[in-house]
Image (cartoon, rainbow, N blue to C red):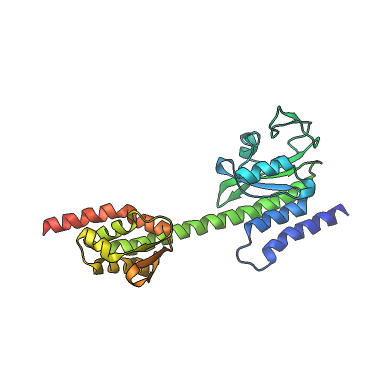
Length: 276
């Protein structure tokens, strides 16, 4: 009977991967594991930050939940050896402990003997973090540990995928920035610097004629520079007639990459003009 119960829980976790979704939702995976095991689940990444968590009401410590959800990190007493152990650890808090989350002097844990399991998370050949399962009342079984290790494998896959997607997005931003950067003339470099020097947020209005007058360049230089940025997918623009041009930043990281590179491009252009 116990084996059948474990098998059913294993199948519930496997269903997350069998839904046909090419990119299972990370939060949904954490939530599903918490419901299957009947425990709070916390995914800790470097710097004790909590990348995801789930607290089932019937098995959670409200103080721990409030701390994690408000700060997005683990309490200090959960750091250190707990997050660096190379292997899974079962029922670490076996004895009655002092609660370190109460604002007043630490007192006995009101839940008695909370259960705690830690499982290292690996992905892509490296350690990505640690998964903690916390049960306010009641200890964990070896069956729970089996499910936790299955869950850590799934979470590791999702974290690895998220990191790869982030890396690809960063590379796309650099490629887009390179396209815009390499196509700018010296005058367009000046125009871009002036346009975005005081540009706050991701939206704004630019009056090309005003900028052109301040720089002593033609309005068309500014228009051409903005078109190059728009073609590279960094911004989108819309004419407001006499009021100017509305600009919305579509790719902030690419824009920042270009702005960081502007001094180098200006220097290259100046050297080129000196030679001729």
